[in-house]
Length: 52
Image 1 (cartoon, rainbow, N blue to C red):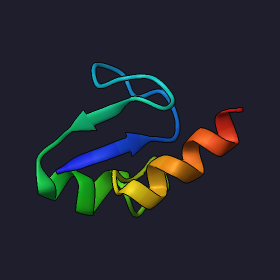
Image 2 (cartoon, helix red, strand yellow; image 1 turned 90 degrees about the vertical axis):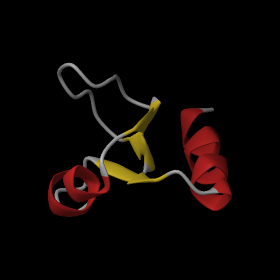
Image 3 (cartoon, rainbow, N blue to C red; image 1 turned 90 degrees about the horizontal axis):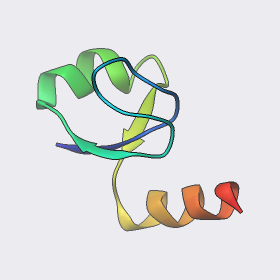
């Protein structure tokens, strides 16, 4: 599953990185805690607007 990180995660990536993780890790840890969002076209656009 591809996700966009909303904060730096050790051994995974930095803020704004699009990374591939196992679906269970994303569903059970990253997404519920607000550390990442799914890497959809809409979320990519929103993140790019926030970055600017």
